[in-house]
Image 1 (cartoon, rainbow, N blue to C red):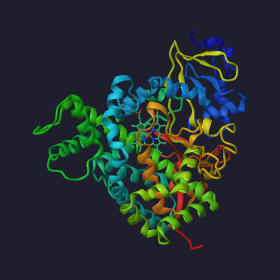
Image 2: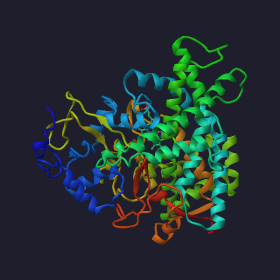
Image 3: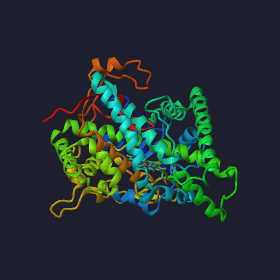
Length: 522
Ligand code: HEM
């Protein structure tokens, strides 16, 4: 059975128009929220507004997609852990534009994906990640220098832009063992990556036609060519020097070893890389570069933002760092470098990151429904069809659901501490910022290590104050970035002006404009 547009009212969801489906509902909603708000919020906002159950349809045909929205952890578990149904075709299309092929680790499926995952898993093992710590620290020091410049100038700047270049530099070290230095100079690869992200249609399900903009296709192609040529040179150079190298191996070196082991060969004596491996490798490097930078930069911006808004939590994280690294913030990086395990002691810092990811998850999965897949409605037990639907377990919808997280819109890192025998919310089945099951984020540990280091190197040194005042945003107008400088109309979601917008992943509105100052002594 297929969802019948004309009889949509017989399925769970907001009132359904026989001709226009849920388009009128979306138009109503858009009057009540900021126009650019990330579509990831829709499920929760609609569920709340129409008092819906935890699985419902949202039908934007013919101008957009037909969704099955899911904010139920058990149904989600069935789809992404037990059955792990394929990724949605729109994601494949989108990733195909972004990195040149849909057969990448993020949007691929089946045997092709399983092989890639096997080949890349060794590059993300704990032992391998520990070897990356010195380079993360080195790049974070450059970032601190940039913050200090801003603190001296007392100017307003987009924190997300600065954090993006930091995370591109970190991921460049992790994946390619190359210093891109995009924080201090214009790097070709970093420029192509940020330009590619800026050209992505705003991923609003109500604007599918944006991908038909001919300029969009040209820019995607052009940026891919630039990225391919840069990455190809780095990979060839790594390959030709592999036998003389005693230094740390990077993710791609380990992937090449795993690939050759699977082929039953070794590359000893070979002067050029296996062309098939190289082609696949370039596509995967791009996937890692995209998936591994803005998810982290956005989360960091929200962590600084939430700590500033919650001075008692800021005091707690600072106290933890004082206790673990001693009173001088300048010593933290050396201590981490020599005793990497010390990062495991940062329990409150980890809780801050987890709570930040609960409130502002940068990504969510979208899967493909099919004719044999039906879902039992958790409220009524009715069997619901999935064919032709984008099956969307929406992370933010679960993370902000009062049933799963009491006082859901408040920043309470303590939820993620196991105190007085009560378990932490880390094991709450409704908590899934990195997704779950076989398609769980491969970069989860890398991201957490990186973010702990950056927080350890910044929260005791600087105060961050976000500002969305129109006067401050005016100063950033025409700063050469792609943020819209949008101040008109409603500018809050859940009473918060720093809501997420879609730009690649979900990111802080306007790139989180801030003033940074050197920390005032208390
Ligand atoms: C705060 C940081 C991060 C968050 C919240 C996050 C979140 C996610 C989520 C929700 C997925 C599942 C997406 C889907 O099913 O469509 C995912 C997958 C993935 N992530 Fe991350 N991610 C983060 C950092 C990273 C980093 C640092 C890397 C890179 C090195 C990375 C690489 C990937 C890849 C390659 C996949 C696809 C894995 C697969 O399907 O086998 N992510 N991530």
